[in-house]
Image 1 (cartoon, rainbow, N blue to C red):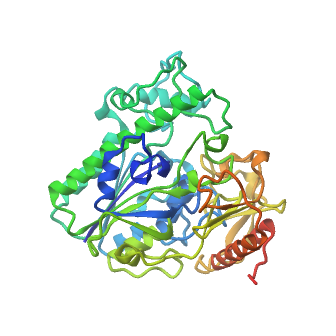
Image 2: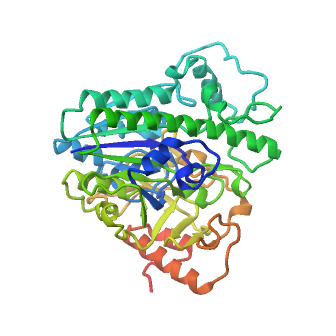
Image 3: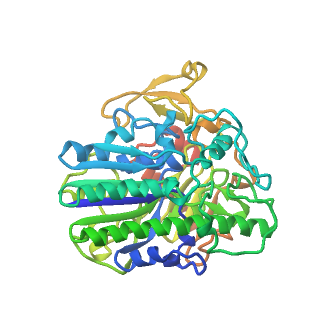
Length: 497
């Protein structure tokens, strides 16, 4: 048995034709939908990037205890478990966060791994002179990462030089080399279509539009201040990169055809979260709650065991289920601490998986959905803490001042008897992956009925439904051994009624 996971970052479900979009050109996503199971109720869990990757290893929520950080010593890692049980696990990626301070311990869990350089602000080429940034470019992000992005772009003049092309090429090389071997898992993980929306001209030409303003392919994490024409331009830049991702999805599908892999190879195509392109008056993510455009994700899976294709599945599933699914596929039991559920039965006949799920970012709203309703509960003023044995932020280690406040916490159910460091969280520290400071207009609790309002334009006032959803939330937090202060912050009873 073999398995491939082709993962894209910040891939919007609502921008794909197989999920109903009528203007973005992505024929290979439609091609895949015709020969796989398409999940209609797939959700993110912990957000954004590295919290989601921790879930893909451990199969349990990250955000209730920790912000952006490495794998922990007590974590169960799906690719490492495969490796230890004779299944070769390989990672081909251009996701540069794996190689920053707060992304440690992920890539080395695989049997082998390849890293393609140059994505976004990856500190790749050591160019002392300033890069040549065209005058007609919106400088959306000041600082080192923005400068480095333009340094890197100078070294990718052609499509074959692009990090997306190279990453998928590296993954297909692994597929080619090992086509006749058994027992392997290949994770091809692309940082695109994450911003900057950098794509060759051929993909931009798919979306001709009248626009006389500056190039803007890297919108800020802020409220919309641009004109409708400028917003449309950014959306076209994103669409061009989605079409490029689609083209390279097509190459993977072609390679599976060529190598005759469909009979014994699972294929998972997924993402970590979406990206706001003007919806709710926002760019990007993080400053606002995790609306449907961000948390409701595309997920397509081909499972050769059942052979179901061209069908939709309405089962409520999420990121934590993917490692459980892969372990089950290779005949391995889930670790006790893994909360995710294998999707074998959902893939075979649409069997329900979860009655409700949680999602969110550490320190922000806690979200709960049962597939019909979505409750987002804003945090109260009570303090919250980081629980970790790996005290790093996104780009740096915890400071001595932060560490001086640390104390040992009692072990959680999933820490295998280990106490953790309990470190007070700083509300204004964006390094924690909480993307603070928050926009005060968005700091509210809200309830939405997704059956009548799928784009969450109008919150509803229904005390009975809200009470029901709060019980789901409290139960799931309790099952995940959430810290006591999390219940206080969310105004919940620690033991559901």
